[in-house]
Length: 162
Ligand code: SME
Image (cartoon, rainbow, N blue to C red; front, side, top):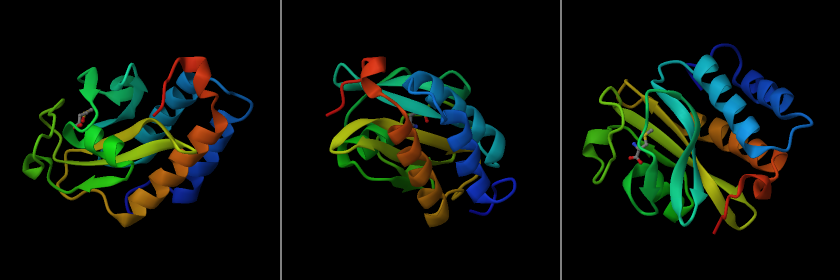
């Protein structure tokens, strides 16, 4: 990853430290959002949407006020969730159905949070730069998502999963 402060592996170590001994998904997601916003360069939004009542509902994040509910299949987040696949969008204005929460966003990456077969939510990062995210970012964020999912007890947060 090009624009992480320090070694990308440090981000994972810091996250593991923050999650250690804590099973609450909201607490762990809040710390993950803070770490991402602090350690990853050129972001204007970093945070989570969780699957609640059959749609994505905003969770802990850093950045400007965001849209609260996103149906599965809508926008970048809903598309990544429905496909259960990481989505890297180099220019959000060219993505059909992109949901603009912050007019400053130009590129975006969304990583699904998968607890075994169950999708519990997505991790979403936005950047004011075009083409900000690449394959290295996808790998790092997928590794972080995996650690967050493993560290947390999702039933504690009333998250359905599907
Ligand atoms: N752009 C997202 C919406 C969430 S915000 O970026 C925080 C989307 O199209 O799903």
